[in-house]
Image 1: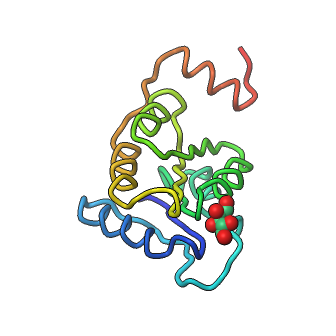
Image 2: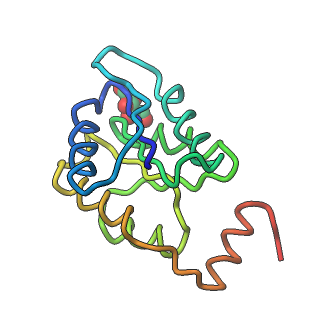
Length: 145
Ligand code: RB5
């Protein structure tokens, strides 16, 4: 189960992502927003980030106009490695190298076709488990070897 949320800039965009994942047999818990009324993106980033950090959800997806605000807010939660991706190379690399557990997308930046490709790569690509990447992630978490 994935956790997903957006702000007012990305409600339809999020619905397309949820429908795409549903067709693939992947369920999402939708934390809102549910309409175009103006909201504050940190209020939507936090429950997704906390849900992933707690282990209730394996991964999360956050969408706002640029993806920037959502990624900044999510990365304030301990244990979250949120990657803002606008290309498929970065989506693959952030799973393999950073073990990113939340994906941020910009609905005003990306077309939905590219966004769905990025989502698929984020969902499908395993962490490399390479020792050097584990060491670097440990350092992000404050565990220096
Ligand atoms: C909302 O207008 C916009 O600021 C928000 O969606 C996002 O782009 C913030 O980073």
